Image 1 (cartoon, one colour):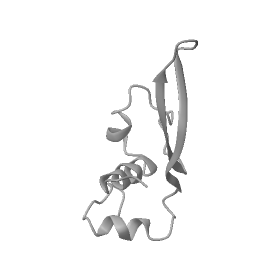
Image 2: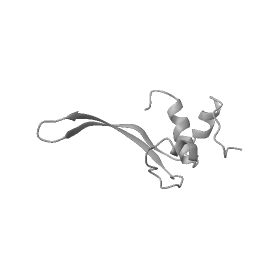
Image 3: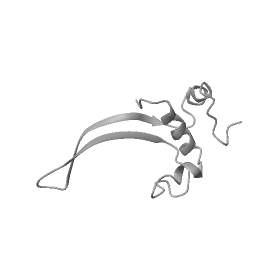
Image 4: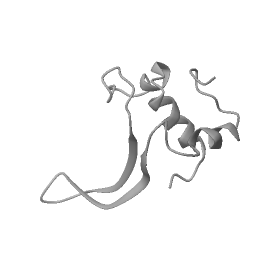
Length: 87
């Protein structure tokens, strides 16, 4: 799980289609649209001798989550982190 709760706010804003958050990426991975699901996988990369990079130690940092995931919206409310489209 992400170590800091603000990650959940970033994920919420991406799922909500917040353009200002997508603009933080060099390339918009969602092609201007809000994704329906997001998961975060983390890897360790090492510079290798035979290949440029070796990737290992995959870790599921955040399981697949959507705007409809039970408890997601209420958990954000505890931090008073609304997204622009929240009621």
